[in-house]
Image (cartoon, rainbow, N blue to C red; front, side):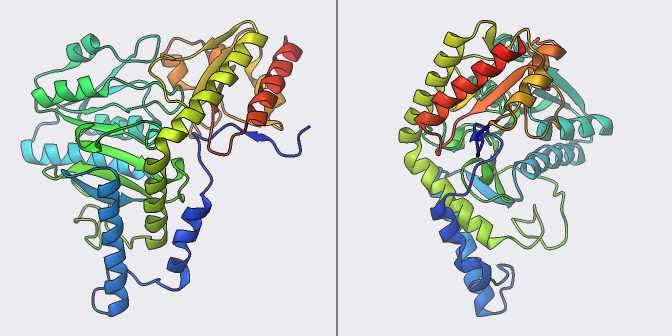
Length: 381
């Protein structure tokens, strides 16, 4: 047994970088005032730091058309975008209208949409192709005259496939349909010129990019109006009331800076180790199948189904040696709805591994992981 398990679950969460921790240090006990308190110098100073952070994020992400709204994380951002926009649409039009999404979206998208379905909105969940990607033809065929909102994540949190969002965005734009995308798994792992053109509303989470937990952002086009979910103080353009966590926002801003600055170098590292891990597992084991497209895929993601083994026993055998998962961190141990949507059986979904590589991953981690997983598969067969 290894004294410390190998971490291959960086898509679930990441550790805070030392530079991020250091950037937050003064804001816990020295510069601690409420940014909303404009009646004193300490509050005015805190407010200025908040707005500087907002401006830095706009600069790092090359944003010229979007507002930066701070939230508690991707889940809240998704809820605010979907519930807030749909309810505003109904208030203005008195029509519930139609929303399109994918069956493979994160629960933080699917569950708010399910709530909107209960309220009267019409929801279409598209089944992706076997490689996890949505076909343009199928997407277009689902559009109706009353379609006003589409929510499709840029990259899947479990199988890592990158959806053709540029094409989807162009289709939505030509029909005056607002596009929302959960971008939580992408920043620092995909190169971009500007996030302005990716979608009308974008969700980003701090703890996925080596920043602190408890903070995220929702980026929205400046002309988009939302119905707020949290009332009480009018912070964040009146869209998200509550005292803002300045230390977390400063740390998140530093994490974004580091992610954008180092993404080219990091992507090369992730690809090298991911491909080495894949080659080793496929070369040493039969009956191991890749879930999702390998061509259109995040560089640090690998998702595999191990045929002819008991999934529960496989994960139990790896538990003390490798930190990995069978699906989303929010799945509560249930078989992945993403893999089921791709056509995997219940048994196959249970016997699947999501392996995600991070900045702290080493060559030795990869080599040892190949050995450990191979030994476990042979033992169970």
